[in-house]
Length: 422
Image (cartoon, rainbow, N blue to C red; front, side, top):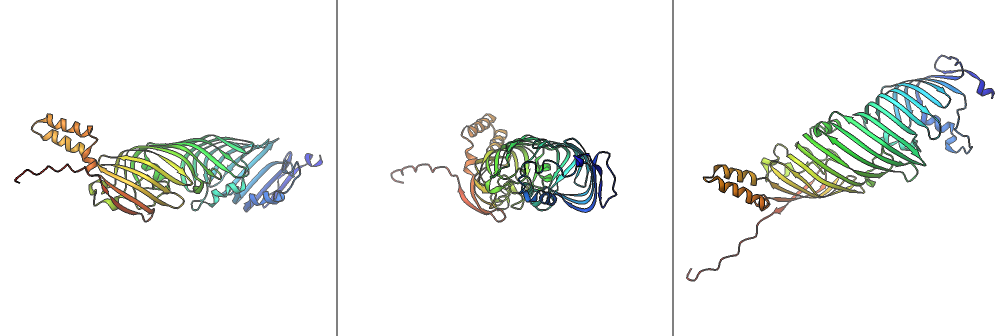
């Protein structure tokens, strides 16, 4: 009781100032390891007292931090200025740091709840995945979240506006709303995270883009596609936290529908999940067959197909790419963990329409040209099938092996019997 009625102040590297009620703590240090302090104060997580961790050792009512480097929950913040006040079980804080700036309200009851509005929130280091992946090691469960960040980033990528709303029930974290909004696209989704071992994330998502080229550039893959509209949707699951996309356990289904773009001349292996979609290993190797089709990068009118994922291996049967110069069908698998592929690619140059239209325009009898065009379409483009080629694309993404398998040829007409005397 005496402790509860006490008030005063503590300063570590900062001037001491007494709070009107409770205790004010001010800290000015080059570095603060919140994770380390939590482990030390909890006795390594072995304190079995019923009230362990339910209340602070001191009746803190105000916290002031000025720290050059702060480590918390696997994240690192630089040039941190934090001012927080407590009223009952509610903390209100104002945060300013290089990576984050905004207002945060923390309610301690139950699993806890966070209501935050950030002008910027940048998570993870620009190089390497350890800082983001380390979050799952420090978080046994997450509180309810209501977070809006006007500018959100991950591992050095600027991803636009973030909205995230979620709650925790019996070790299952329900993500009701996930929305990331950019000028060139939107990502929306929902899902769950099982925080108890074995941990697992289930996510249902839809990614829509009005300019695929700009979006891929923002994600770190510039000069891969020109223009393009696309929708990628599906359901995926993997072992681990939402921030840890574990490729060896990745499973689910995805559907792709894209239009009006052009693949650039690429080196193989520019992106883990991009390799199965972009024909990046083909243009250089089949240019001798279709130099006019692939010399400037393959333009597409539409891409459509479904992709099944099992243990990080993607399978499609088929993925169809239609362009003004050719139709491409891709069947087979691509392994994300191993970065290998085993694909069969059929290329059919789109010749029938131009041949028929030319005949219609230049023929002495235009009616004959029109009839020819209609017959071509009714017979499912026999000229295209006649000139189509099939390739096997195998091996690693950075050094694929491309082998020509053959081309479709019509059956030979039966030989006429020789006339007597000839």
